Image 1 (cartoon, rainbow, N blue to C red):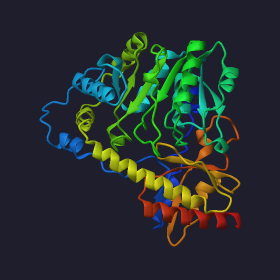
Image 2: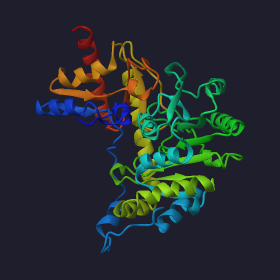
Image 3: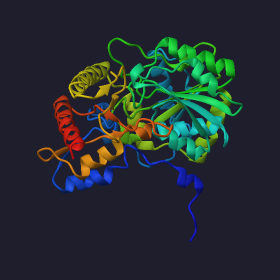
Image 4: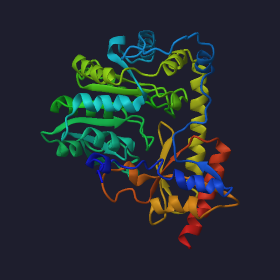
Length: 397
């Protein structure tokens, strides 16, 4: 019998999606499942984006330019500039989601066997993208006790080898919700400049910052124009996860010319989704003001309710819409499956993402879960109440 590839065997399962079959079984039993496991916002997509699809006059669904519609890239560059990110149309390639942008970034900067340093816990698919690219992830651990702040730069320097090509961050962070300070971004900039590395920043949650804190883009740090690569997406900003439109952004002409070869190989990003994404740039500021107010309220309620459960520890997120919670249990993977397979509280249960899948260091995060606060506030309160009952029952079974 033919064998699958070693690369395929090494591809990690998604800690977010691997429990879906158990959730489906729970629903077939008639149980209501509160989905805290996935960053799918319940916020409505801007009407202007939906109307652009409904009212379009496209007669043929043609290929677009491999870099994406020029009109979209031009308006996107203007939108970045209006928000203090100084980039031009030529610095942008539209991709099929932020995921493809990350694959282009890795493919354009790294060869098989090269190493990339990533503060963990990190977005689980960074593991998958790296395996697919033959790249070795070298983790540097941030901790819940420190609020998942940037680890000391000395910890990064200890890990740099001749094979190190890049540092990758998510800012604000998935799964932690941590927002890097200007000082932390500058520290990373100094590091990559000193060691001639790329700094790849996944900035898809840039709008979602709370408590007056400001997002600092790697594209605005003087002196690292040739080092900096930004990843972006419409998925969370406009609640358009299904559009699958993102972009890779860099002032490094060689990187962008290389990324273009990958873009040409996959032909072009989807036409209808680009139409919607271009229209979404006209979304009024009031939309974001309302969304950020809603997420801040959800964050405050979630953290408040979680801290009422004896033994639970949680770091207050500064951005995005995720948090990591440490639970008084033996194993979060077993607990998450048990929640769906064997537990309900008045016909209801919750689905969470075990956090070990957001680490690449073995045996770390085993009692942690990631929670996405993408449900309305009353559902979050109910979800935490169910979680409290579940922890009590799980530990007494």
